[in-house]
Amino acid sequence: MDVTHDDWVRRARNLVLPGAHLVDGAEHDGGGGAFPVISPRDGQVLAHVADGGAAEVDLAVAAARKAFDSGPWPRLAPAERGRVLLRIAELIEERRPELALTVSLEMGKPITDAHDIELRALINTFRWYGELADKLTDESPHTAPDALALVTREPAGVVGAVVPWNFPLTLAGWKIAPALAAGCTVVLKPSENSPLSALHLGRIATEAGLPAGVLNVVNGDGPVAGQALGLHPDVDVLAFTGSTAVGRHFLRYAADSNLKRVWLELGGKSPNIVFPDAPDLEKAAATAAWGIFFNQGEMCTAPSRLLVHSAIAERVTEAVVERARTLRVGDPLDPATEMGALVGQAHLDRVLGHIQAGVDAGVRLRTGGERILPETGGFYLRPTVFDQVVPGSRPAREEIFGPVLSVLTFDDLDEAVTLANATEYGLAAGLWTSDLSTAHQVSRALRAGTVWVNCYEEGDLTVPFGGMKQSGNGRDKSVHALEKYTELKTTWIQL
Ligand code: NAD
Image (cartoon, rainbow, N blue to C red; front, side):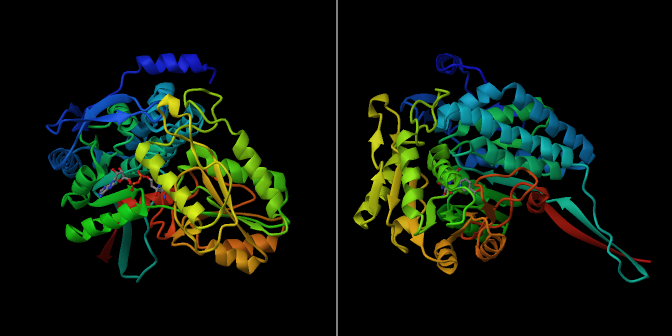
């Protein structure tokens, strides 16, 4: 997009931001007061949004329940549902710059990434599930000759979707689009850090012709509004993306209420393994650096552990450190910015605490480690690289969710695999080799939902995404996402 820094700043000043919840197709202010949304770009208040609690969640769930139990949406021909999703994709495309600007302002990612990556993913998601809606078939297994068996997929009901702030629109879309395609109705609870883009998306969906109550958006604090949704007896499915710690809460909420199905996309501490026969070591190093600093390192899949063979460790680490030193960190609204601001003061303090813990554990700080640009009022951190990280230490195990890389070394394939699997997480992994057998052997041995070979963060809507171990269960994206939002029914007809 050909928009200058000054243009984005001007557009930001004139941006009209929504603040009310969306309940039953209408704006709803609720009675819970309002909370400020702070922009990480400069620490200034961007807007105030309605603060939802149990009462607002009740209203939204009641609307979604009515829309599911007696409304048209689950009873429409799937092709009709698909048309509405395609219309949502068109409207998002029309409003792409203002949505990208909202995301960039509320959570601090560079405007170019918001526009080119986050919004592209969102549009593709609604298109893909819109096109998929009427391409699905049920089963009729070959069973006894005197019987006809039908195995049909039915919409699972009211879906509560609770999402984080790092990809506020893409991750909301990964829940909403397949749930709607399946015929479910949804209550979305965005992160308190990034409610503005979600509220905007809700309004677009209504404008695109989604019937009232099919998609509701309630803002509010996690332990208040998120908990109310998790405990609600009329929610059939809870689809969550966020930290492993909060994922545990959702399993408890389900156990303490109606045993709703809980789908979890959680944290990660992903390994990125570089073997000495990598086809292109420069590319491996550049991708390792891009992977950990992209989106300020606020990526569940961030390749935050670089496992590199000791014979090439210094060469690869030096190339990553060089990239870290030259990365352009600054105003998210500047199209030339490569890394923006961390989401907030509390998160910046958390990441700095992790860095201090690394230093205390005796790892070597090769570059970064400190806050920069404090005069802006924003929350900027210098890209950080640790090496000589000891297996089992905190920087080798804990998710930091910031632009902080831990480098570890290995001497053979078995050691690489053991190190790679030595965390509680199992979200993603990368490996770099020219050897076909190494690629397949290591990929099979890695306990991770996605393995990238000679690349990182690649993919499209056709492939599922999700975690093993404590990185979660179930899968977003692809046809498999529909498994979360449908129930299988067997009908046995005696002939
Ligand atoms: P978080 O778990 O703090 O919050 C996520 C959501 O849960 C927010 O909407 C929040 O309001 C809500 N919440 C918080 N506490 C709650 C509670 N007690 N009860 C109910 N709801 C509650 O996570 P975050 O800081 O927003 O995001 C960062 C985390 O998300 C990281 O761990 C990251 O790895 C993970 N993440 C995972 C994926 C994935 O697909 N696996 C993608 C992106 C982010």
